[in-house]
Length: 300
Image 1 (cartoon, rainbow, N blue to C red):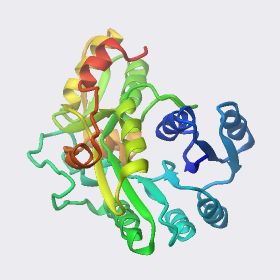
Image 2: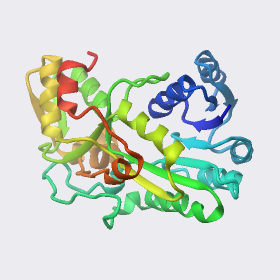
Image 3: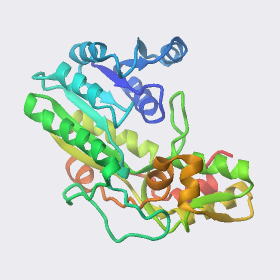
Image 4: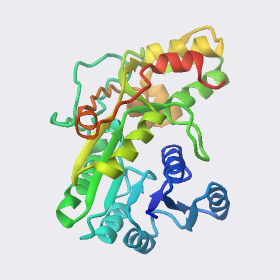
C-alpha cells in the first residue's frame, strides 16, 4: 500500500485530496497541529502526525519514510519545503507543492481588467510581495536535480464544497459572509479585475493525476474558466437575495481585510491558462462556471 504524507490535511484542498486518496486505497499520514485535529483526521481514516511546519526534523523524517509528500499547508514556508526536499532527496519520490495564482497577480485594486494571461511557459511578472512565494516554487522545481520528483500545482480561484474538515475555500466564502454581515456584497474597487477559477473536484483530479504521472520539475496551472469580481459580486447578491454590489475603495478594504486579501486575493487580476496539465496529464476538468455554481449550488 502506498503511503503519502500530507501537510494541510485538515484544510480545504488537503482534506479533499486526502478523501480521494483514501478512497483510492492509499494510506495517508496527515500533519495535525493539535489533538482535536488529530482526532478529526483519525475519524476520516488518516493516521495523524502531531506537529506543524516549524517542526523541521519531523517533516524530514515523515518525508523520508513516505512514498511521497503532498504539501497543501502553506505556499510560503521556505524552511518546511527545505526539510521535505531533504527528506526525499535521491529517492525519486514525488513532492507535490501547492502554490497559488496570486503569484502573478497585479496591482489593479479592482479598477481594471488586464489583458495579461499567463500559461506555464509565459515569463511571469511577479509583484515584490509575491516574489518569496515564486522563489519557493522555483526551489521545489529545482529539487528535480536532487532526485526528487518535484511538482508545483498553482490553482487559481477555487470554488465548490470541500470534502475535508474545512469545506470552504478562501475568496468566495469570505465575500459571502462579509455580504451577510454588511447587508450587501462588497468588492474591491469596481470589481473589474478578473481571476481564472477552478472547481475543487477538478483540483483534486489534477493532484491525483500529477502524483501518478508527472515528470520531475513540472509546473501546472489549475483553471477552467474566469470571471470578474463584479460578476461574482452580482451572482452573490442574487444568491443571497441582497440588493446589490457596493464598491469598496481598495485602501479601505486593505484596512478592514488586510493588504494581502484586498490587493491580491480580491483586488488583482490573475488570468492563467493550464495548458500543460491538459496536454501532458490528460486532465479534463468538468466544471466551467463559477457564476452558475454561486447562483445555483453555493450553500447559503
